[in-house]
Image (cartoon, rainbow, N blue to C red; front, side):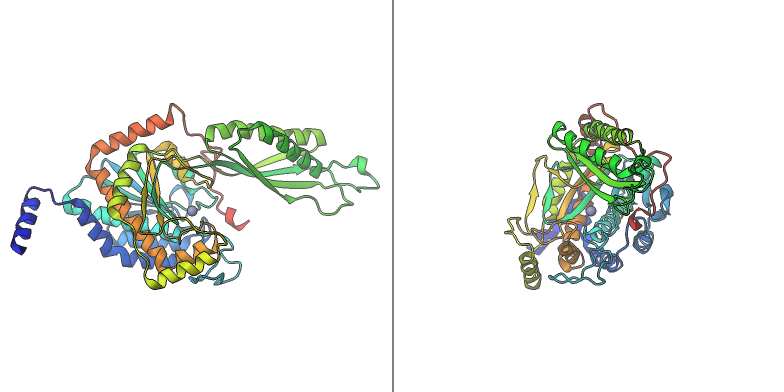
Length: 473
Ligand SMILES: [Zn+2]
């Protein structure tokens, strides 16, 4: 029996038909513990966007130790980096993020319990995102070496996804110009590959400058910045009726003046608009700008706009998502240990609703074109290079990103098991793409079809400096 098996194995080897999958998955397994530790270390030192000094340095160090050539501090951002192995085409990039969120400090326990109240925490699981992508890059690189696969595998360390838009500056710096395909993933409560997209968004600060005066004694001498702002926001409310219904517009007044008896010389609102299509959003945005101009004109004040986050929607790539779907089916999900099951149940009790999402053993691959209401700078990348992403079950079913529950999962063994699903999927898909030039061609065709003659545009200026202190404001 044994002899027979060995014979079969040897003949498969001789024919070069030994499934490559097993090899690359073995390589993922060999590094999984180390990158699990890396993810935990990043989770323990949560750093806000553009300040991910320790997190990016750790990932750089791990990739360097695994034979990657690292360029640190690219595109004018100290925490952005590229790590590269191999040469020539195809060029495959796996993207990693590692920034934390403000105020979501949380221990790895199923009750609300911050490590440091008010401090940042990994409520979006980017500690896992960055680490799983690095783990996959290492496995792909080893597989390329072992089997003489040609091409280049790169890891892009992309900072400040949570509002700073690191990837946009990396696009402007030309770092995606020679790239054939990009693979990415995001932590979530399910293992899922589909043709999902995210909303395009645009936002920033509208500042009005007026003239202060005594509100009772000399109102005629004053020009109220708050009036300008309120006229703008009222106009935005009227506009709401006449935009496509998928549009979202939300704002807060961050400064409405200092005292009721002083005509406000300064007022400010932070406004964000979203739509499933970046180009439709652009048209809506111009009308919002007109509301602001109208406010200034009517109130005799001056308006200034300070650009904030501007992310494009995701253009899904039909061909690459098919590669990812095959990969995830092979990669498989995982099971909870009894302790993890109990953690999951306790955490679900804090959600306050009945959870219908299936467990982490479940894999969902489909061609459904869902639009999640979040936004990401991965969307911008998808407009310039064929890009595909998926989610892995790093959070307990029912837990959504940007919550303390997500931060708890991101530091737990559940998070680390989910990140291995992601790394296995990325590694299998990555090797598949590098090995089969037809996949690269198909990805390019799918990209061109989705782009439909349109071009990527952004409100972030090409020569603009990254807002390195945006997370500190
Ligand atoms: Zn995120």
